[in-house]
Length: 158
Image (cartoon, rainbow, N blue to C red; front, side, top):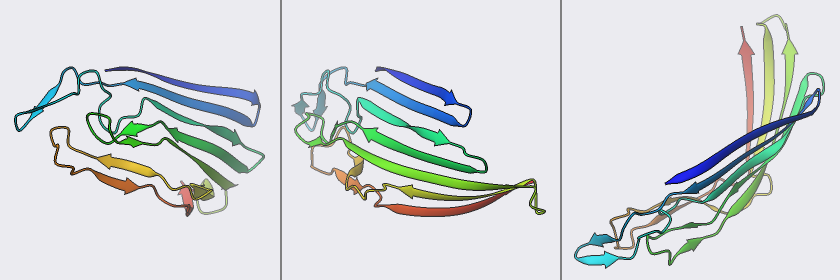
């Protein structure tokens, strides 16, 4: 296997950060596999459930005590079987995060209240493919991605 992991930040203004994390992975089988006496054509194929492309990109905008971060997550197509007969589509989900920080509020150096909206448009997708390389018995398990999720947190820094 080999790959490329490129991470970049650009600062177009004092309170704005653009970020992009791109991953390209080639992880292939070095030969055919044999299971219960049957040869499986695996040589040179991408390893099961491993996407070649992944991307996470977005903006972090910090006006004053606020921080607002819209971002996207992309996972390229994958395969659920060694012979690549069962393709699992790529997906893109959008997230939105925001926070407000109180400095020196009397209960520590700072208090941050944050709100996350993950999978903002409630996209349906397959998040995890669980398949054993050596199994041809059709025992693949698919796990759905989380629906639109809201997370509210509070943190105190002393």
